Image (tube, rainbow, N blue to C red):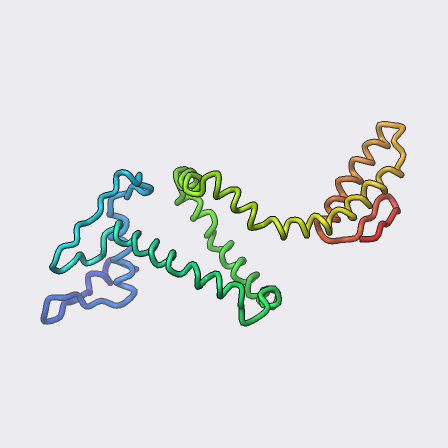
Length: 209
């Protein structure tokens, strides 16, 4: 948008600006460029609670209040989230599979817009460290506990495939360096096949999955 279009902005009888959405978008983008950098990830000990006083509040609530309301609403919704997640209206796996094309379209759009790269550039190392500190050792253990049953089922399904691969590898010659190199390559390819959910094939040996 050219500067000329911004110059064309007029005011109403109250002195307020009259501008199109495009003009506002341009002007607001220029305003954002001129704003000073904001230091994020302040230490909790540095935060001060705002006193509750009568009167008209700020045009936009303080960061402390904003954060407090975000945390409070999230905590209050925890039980509801738990109940709703365990009683979905539709099969979540089937729903996810049916939405695959939409997922691919959104992923392609996100890649084209480089959303991941832009998000990474906006992060600070403190974002990672504070997340780890917030979760703590118990949070890490809790994550393992929440995945334990699913992981055990995956291991039970994986073990016979790994065993079949090992038995197939054992049947390969290993007298020369070339033989041993082939065994290493076969093992690598076999694990890739397992990861992709395929049946295992090692040098003509096919094992059931």
